[in-house]
Amino acid sequence: MGSGMSRGPRRGFGLEASRGMLPLLALQVLMEYGRAGASRPPVTAALLAANVLIYLRPGALHEILPSIARASFNPQLIVEYGDWTRFFLSPFYHLSESHLFYNMTSLLWKGIQLETSMGSAEFASMVAALLGLSQGITLLLAKGLILFGDYTAYYDQFSVGFSGVLFAMKVVLNAWSDDFVYLHGMVIPAKYAAWAELILIQVFIPGTSFLGHLGGILAGLVYLWLKRTFNGPDPFTLLITSITKVVTWPVKFAQKLLRSASSQGRITGRGRVGRRASARETGRGLWRCSTCTYDNSIATDICEMCSTAREDSSFSHRQNHQAGGSGELSIDEIRRRRLQRFDR
Image (cartoon, rainbow, N blue to C red; front, side):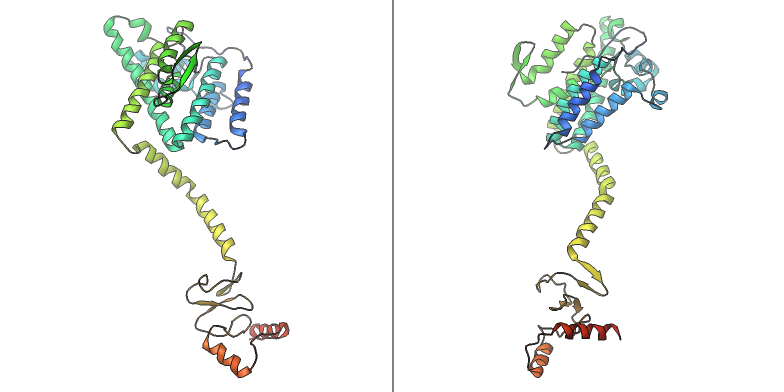
């Protein structure tokens, strides 16, 4: 279950002292990705890494990334001053280690299930869509509530955290589920779990952003409606799939060349020396010597490698009949013919 998005009036944000939750988060990730037969979805891992790195801000990232005060979501600053950095970056910032831990454990559980069932490209597209929808709907709700006179509590609210996207993912994950879930001692249908969690979080953790979580639930519903209305992959999924194919093409091409080289045998001269093959396996325009397995041109009836007569031609039958023998050559005769061949 994701931790709520913290809110408050204009104030600075500070990180609390470590409670040892990050090593516990790392242990959970290792247990999920390290167990035998695990699917190891890469997009979920990338999202986890991005959130943790932004929270820790190691090395040069501390200078590159804006502070949490500059990145926190604030409807007034976004609408009236066009500060869109807050719109896109605020989901990846967290107030405290516990805030990060609960959100990331929720992302780990939901992300693995969704990405495994949907595929990485479609999952990445969905996360991007849910992030934009949840932030946009929250912004519209905050702006719309000004009409009811509640200016300070919503329009001038600061919030951070991935919870809005997590609520949207919960809606998508449980949309077609007939299961029941236990939530604080209550048994409710899974499809209504997000709504129940929205109310319970406000009751037990009143400092969380109600609009941020509500915007996430509505974003999940809008996403599902769009998927039902417009069948087929969305353009963003097609774009991610195309980029993935372009990036991985050199690796796949190299693997194909290695497999082709290992299966075809050793290349030498104009022909090829390899295992014995049937007439169907031998390339068109070539015949394979039964003695040294060299592939010769069909224009000649004498093996260019060991000078053995071609067995399946009328020429070799004539030579065999004239010789009055079985056509089998001794090892010394093959060696002598090879020496004659290379001494030319």
